[in-house]
Image (cartoon, rainbow, N blue to C red):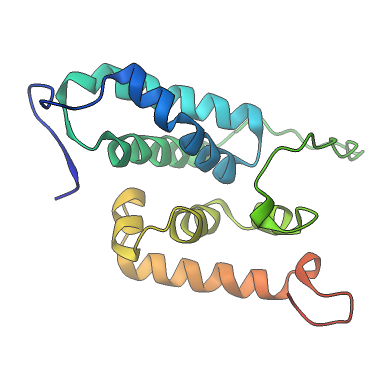
Length: 177
């Protein structure tokens, strides 16, 4: 069973919803951004997840973060399963948006890792984000995504293979970083 369960009452000593949001929303927003690669969508995803968590808050026992993270990931998964997600093809590519110091410096000097992650299929990106940025185990990742541990392993392997050959991650001297 997960670190958090749902029952008919709030756990004694559990943090209030407002305190939880104040303490954890920055980290959850980072996870949402890593999944969506879009600040607006990440904010929408987090808001949707927090709304769902708020509605069930009186039944949350234990640490609520795994429960809210699961809502975040399953909501993201339901978005990627939609047939139409708002993207429309265009003959001209838009200009690249300017970055305003947003993101995580651990991703690389120029955001190359962010770009490479963005080129991964959504499920592979979700597995990589949960395994390597959120430090979840294979079993925890499988539980969150409602897939088998074997699928987590194969998706991780495929994602890492794609990242190894991604041209944006190659050293200027021809090797890979």
